[in-house]
Length: 225
Image 1 (cartoon, rainbow, N blue to C red):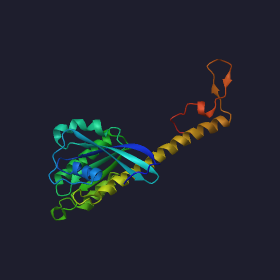
Image 2: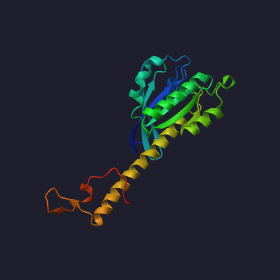
Image 3: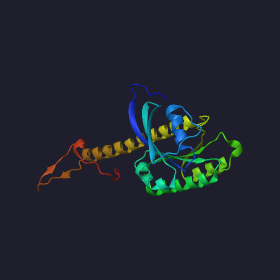
Image 4: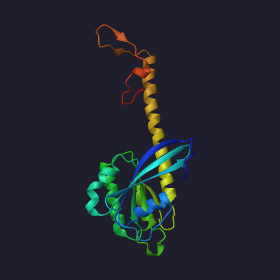
C-alpha cells in the first residue's frame, strides 16, 4: 500500500455513503489504520481521512469523506459527493433495509453526481454469513444493471477492504488516462487542421494570421471529421 517516493501523486476525492450502522466508518478505519473497533460511534456530519495507494506507476492519494448515515444529515451529502472521483455505497448484508437505502443513494448519485464518478457497491459484514439477509447474487445483479463495481467486504476481518480501494484506484487511473488521451486527441486534431492550411480570421479586416498550435484555443467539440 505504501507509495514509492518517485511516483507522481494524484489526489482523488472519495466519499462513502450508506445507512447508519452499515459499517462505513469501520471500512475506512480498517483501510487507513488497519484497525477495527467493535462498537464504533456513529459519525456526526462527516469525517475526513486520507491514505495513499500505489497503483501501477502512479500514487493515488485518497481524500476520503465518511458521511453520516442518519437521515438528519442527508442534506449535507451533496457537499461531499459532488466533484468526487469515486463513491462507495455501503450496505449491511444482514439488513435488507440498508440495501434498499443503498439503492436510493445510487439513484441520487446518478441523478445529481458527476457522470464520471466511479461508484462501488460494498456489501459489508461479509463475516456474518449465518445472518445474511441480502443474497450476493441479488446485489451483484443490481450492480451490473446500474454499472456499479460490486464487492462484499468485512471491516472486522479485513476481507476485500484493501481490494475495493485498490480496484477503485486502478479504475480512476484508467479513467484519468482516458481523459488525457481525449484531451491530447483534440489538441492533435487542432494542430492537424492548422498544418493543412486552415487559418484563423484576424481581428483586422483584410489580414490573416497563421496561429501556432499551442496558441490556438482548443474547442470542446469533436474534430478530425
